[in-house]
Length: 485
Ligand code: NAD
Image (cartoon, rainbow, N blue to C red; front, side, top):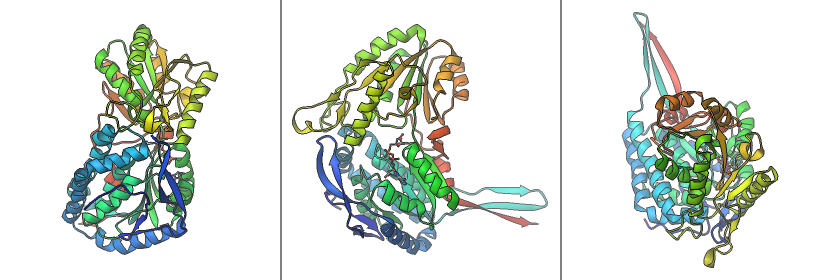
């Protein structure tokens, strides 16, 4: 198989590459250069209808395919992703703006890992049995749901797309999947990989388009019985409004405003190096980034000085240059949103300690969308800057005096996705971990990921969990069978 980065994308339906029925296309822009470099289908309910038909035709066979046969195909997809990692990484960087070294190290590596993990996971997944002594025995079947919808965002394009598709397929479902219209190319390349790996036609259908026309058509289709969605809280709310009255199974992985709590007694070097990453990796466009840094008052000034110094050393520019730490913001729209958030922070009385400006690199990236890593202080917990998701290279600093105050600040938003705690006192860390309102807590680390662990948020950060058995349970229906003796 020879993979090349395409300019003109097509939907992948029933094993065929086809244009949208409406012939409507959206421009695809490289955010590092600002140039339009391709077109992608803007599909609608008619395209979703033919994708659902293709999935229906494929379901009987796929759901009855043995676990071992499914394993062989999904594992082959993982191998082909690995073999084509260079081209996939370049496609991801062109689409998303992230540094090429990061695409290689994290995104593409993890996309293969997702397929490998769920390919093997399915070989070990089993239902439960409950004995009612001398009366009856129950066993619980875990059956595929049928046709499921998977919708993913632009920040970790192939990484999050495969995080949904792999367990859905492993569990025996047929899938209608939509990548973000902002970063569609690696999903298109994945379609070629799946075909080459021998995935039967119609088992995975990848349909491109925007949220209102293509995404909502997936949510509304009555034969798509479950939706796994990762994206903004705003879109999640809209999806829940449509899907809930149709009694669809829903997994919603939404936004965050994550606290990073730093105590005086932490391993300072490790904390500082990790906090730079947890603040600015992927231009701060990771739902797990710690955007509110809470620092024990006794070390507030020490932290501030060292953190400003390290942040101002970060290089921003051409994502193809491996010496740059930060690449481009994903789109002009998002660039403008972040710049507006920085203005709001100033209006709210925040002080910009470093950054705060757009960056204009010379050469090929002169028209790209770049922003300096930005640190803001002097704002209370209730302002917009500290309560609303910015999703860019912008963090705030707030001091605290006691564990109670740290917890109060940490829990002072409507979000509850992830959190980080830095202290050598493990009892203190455990007390906070138990009381913090978040689905994920890291103690003395960040983004340490074991794919078996439950992943997801509380409050406005979402409903449900992904990862490990949680994902396999989401993508199957439990059917209990009771036999009386
Ligand atoms: P978004 O909500 O705008 O879009 C996400 C996806 O949903 C895209 O494919 C989009 O086309 C589609 N979509 C949008 N509106 C839709 C609708 N009404 N119906 C159906 N589909 C719709 O989000 P984004 O801007 O692409 O991504 C950034 C957001 O994603 C941030 O809020 C970030 O925190 C969140 N995110 C969360 C996680 C997590 O695991 N919790 C991970 C990554 C990103």
